[in-house]
Image (cartoon, rainbow, N blue to C red; front, top):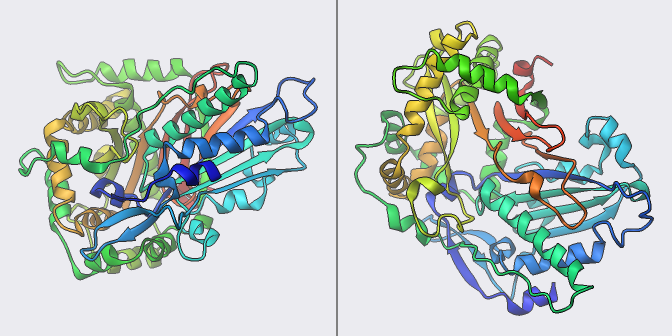
Length: 480
């Protein structure tokens, strides 16, 4: 830690509209590492505590933003202040726990077997409880299991400073530094590989476009519709805003459901749906799976509508959408890095992901879940994703940064929709390439108990294959 404090420089990092949209959330992820070497009777060889700690603080030199604080300037624009004389260091703990890896594995990796503070760190509002004045921008827990049987790592990073790509970049860099430190014990001449992570949000200025002709009507209208309530939200400190948003999606009413699907099953579904695609249209894996989830979860949402109290509270706060009340809004995540064609986009670890909103009619969503109807929904999704090109992103970038409350208009106005879900396909992300020198994780899982009706399509361990569908659903929707 002292080495980091000696080299870090004071700086202010302005937040972009893409950061502000998700600034009230965290990205909490579990990595479950199993010690398969029965001869290890200490932590010296398996993820040694001192090496993990030292490599963590060395990695912070590449991610100084994690030691900053969320701030708002006089014009209500957000930024992160990194003050070398008053750092807001990430919370880092390393503890032992009297439960072995086998028991956790046999339980289906039940997080209730872990220390309570693991679950606490997964709440959008709880991060502020670890500090008296400022929310920690990073919370990291290392839990060492009984008899050196394994390690559970929780890494929770403020979404306002990284997206999923940036989160994984930090973890992979930490793992790389850890391996380097262990290898240096035998080969002291080894040099740490260099990296070129970009935190400067100036990258967004390079592709702004002031027109709006490429934007869809729904997004254009949402960004133009302001109100006194929206302006009030945009001026609130992030911690206070967190508490309001959390009260509207209490974690006790959200359950996580995991489903494993064989790769061949998905391939068969894609081939069947492709037979009904319009001439010249080619569905991607993401199109078909997102369409399937839109129909399955959309039907469950409609069947188990929100309570009248919650519905009335939402409509009182946010108003009523212009769509038909039975329509379903699917928000499909899009990684914009390859689409903006910027030389620094691959090294940028801030928010360069967004969701395309696709409105599906009740008749379409409520139809039978067969390849023909899935193809009809997939066509809507394919059209929206294909239209998310450099021009669209440039205009969206300009739109959400035009006014100090522009980003809050999108957040608030899209909350008007009664039937909505979010779909994130990260099945190609390298979560199972993370290696701290003791092998890849046995399991990786995000945990979002504060996001209602959110679906994540995850990769599986190479020994298993296929895909895991991780869903954070309202209890009524999940049927439990």
